[in-house]
Amino acid sequence: MKYCILFLLISVSQLSNAQKTMVFYDSIYHVSVPKVQVSSTENGFVGLSNANGAVALQDVSYPLQAKHFGYQTGTIAAYTDTFFLVANYQEIEEVVLKPVNKMELYTRILTNSSEQISRSNGILSGTYFESVMIINPSKKDTVFLNNSCDMIIQKTFEKKKYSYQLYCANGQRNYRKGESSTLEDFDTTVMNKMLSFLDPFKKYLKYDLVSTKPYKLKFEEDQISREMEGELYSLTFEEQEKFNKQVIAEYRDETLYTWEMEVLSNKIYDGEGLFINRKKEAQYIEFSNDPEYFVNSIIANGILQVAVDGEFVELHVVKGFLQDSSVDFELNSPYKQVKNYFENIEYSNESIGFYKFELK
Image (cartoon, rainbow, N blue to C red; front, side):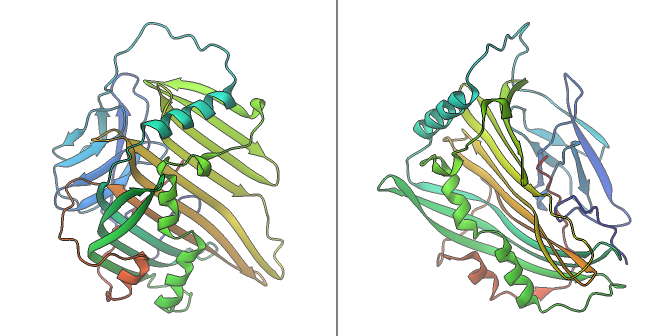
C-alpha cells in the first residue's frame, strides 16, 4: 500500500481506505473550530482537529468526547460528518478594542498568569506520544515509527520552580514501512535517535509559567496584532527575516490559555551536494483551570529536510502530552527520560493510529 502524505502536515492522520472525517463548527457563528481534542473511553485519544476543524477517524468506538477551551464538552453518539460545539460564553452586543501597547499587554499577561499558576504539589495524568515519519516526497514513500503510553507527571514545587517525575504504563511501539517503498529498512534504534531532533520532553515542562523566561519575546509593536474571537483575545507576533516566525498567545482577563510558536526556514535546496534544513520547529502549550490553573497539553513538532546529490527526504517528528484525568495506574519507578521506558518494549507491526497535528 502506498501512503500519499501531505507534506505540510505533521505526521500524521489516520490512513485507511475506510477513513472518515468529522468537522467541528461553532454552533453560533458556524465557523470551523481547530484544535478540538477527540477521545473515547475504549480508544483513548483519537485525534486533534486541524486548522479547518477536521479530524480523521478510523475504527473508533462511540460515543466520542470533543473538548475545546471555551466550549461545552460534546458527546458524539454516532458518526456524523459535521458536529457543532456549544460555546460557554454569552454573546455581547458590542466590544470596542482600545489602542494599547501590545508588548506591554503581553508582559502583563505573562506576569498575571505566572501569579495565578498553581504552586501546589500534585499530578497530571494523560497520554504521551512521540512519532517519527520519514518521507521521500518524489516517490511518496514512508517509514513510520510511533511510541505512546499513559503517563502520570508528578510535580513538586520547591525553590520557586517545579521538579518533575514521569511515570509510564501501557506503552506501545509500532513500526511501519510502505509495502512498495524504495527506502531501505531503517534500524529502529537509528529512528529513535531521530527523535532527538526535538528537545527532550522534560524541557517543554519548563513552560509551566512558574517562570516566564521561556515565553519572553522581542518584537516591534508593528509586528504584533490583537484580535477577539468569542470570549478569547489573541496576540499574534509575526517576523519575516531569515526565518518566518509566528507566536500566537490566546488569553482572557489577562490570563494566558494557549501559547504556540512556529519557526519556518526559507532555505531552498538547489539540487546538488549536501543539504540539511530545519524546515519547521513548532510548539503548542495549553492551560486549564480544571481543577487548578496549570499546563494541560504540550505538543512539539518539527520537519527536517536532508538531501545528498538530489536524493531528498523529509523527517517529521512530533512529541506531546494531552491531559486526561481518567488515566490512573500504580506509580512504579519514575523515568527521567521517556526513551528509557520505551527501550524495554518490543515493536509491533499492528495497525497504527495515525495522529494529525497542525498548529495553524
